[in-house]
Length: 310
Length: 176
Image (cartoon, rainbow over all chains, first blue to last red):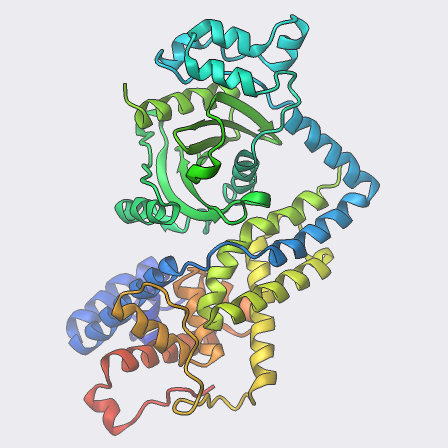
């Protein structure tokens, strides 16, 4: 460790600029900068350079991931899956995705909490009772949206989640555990972040505020979809609570010519993470977290109310 | 007992967009960047058994990428540390709607030697600690510090012009 009062070196100045200076060294460096205007000018210049470099990186947009790149990894994944245990895993994942609860949560006028009974009807229960979860939800609200959803959505529970929801769950699994690289653009630059992501996705986005629920915005990230959606930009907002638990809101914007059918709230559990998703007005949202269904549902409800204020 | 190998490999997919963006600054132009990412992914898949689950996947990918990148430029141009400042090919910029000062910065970056650029980008853009950057580039921390210093000074001089002192003692822009 560096002596507290040792002479200030270029290394110290770099560490100061990069936020890597030992705390007890800071006073010495500050004194040095006050006493040496030339050093202060230099450090300020490096600091400006650093910020510009980060801006350049943010604004660098390499476009959709070429299929050839993803294919390299896909081949390897297939090889892993051929192993017996890999197949077992694949089967498990399939079941997990297949069990996409056709838990419905109408998106119509009524406050989500008041139709809580509609939600929670999972596919299995619906099938056993001979009805469909959709019926329950439809009864609960009677809205056009719910009816539309029911018409187009198989209710036997085998419906796979849309691609963007699977992408959202993958993106959650990849980035939520990241310590240093959880986000590309931190929340301190929220205005810039939202503007940047809106521009990339081509429609205005907002980052919902979840302070009252104990979650602060960490920042966001620009991603691309997978599979058939490989050319579509996606946004991921990440939130964290005081215990360090993370929640991501993944947003897809669908082009007018290929807008999927709107859906009510649905959920799917993949591994530890529960994803709540809905499609409305050309936007697809998926809220993912390693929390209980009811906790994720409550957060989704808050977000929905902010996005579509009544 | 379930082996998560397929799932682990799938995590690489999530890193591709960020790797591409980083490679774009490291390698300069879009085609070279995607070549670099492709080679990185191929090596990661071929050497997958070397990755220790639970460790930082991104740092591992970055290590592979820099290894490939620095080896490639070493093959391609004798690594005497003297990148051609005057007669090198103009960097192939894809039209990106950058503000003019961003364009200057991009050009300045392109004029750094690969070794200097790597150190600068890892620390500035990726915010790795000096120790982590040293590990990724497989050099001592002291080397990271001196490369970082030369990189920053080179970019500064290219963008702002030299100070009076440097006019009398020109900075060696491209050494090492």
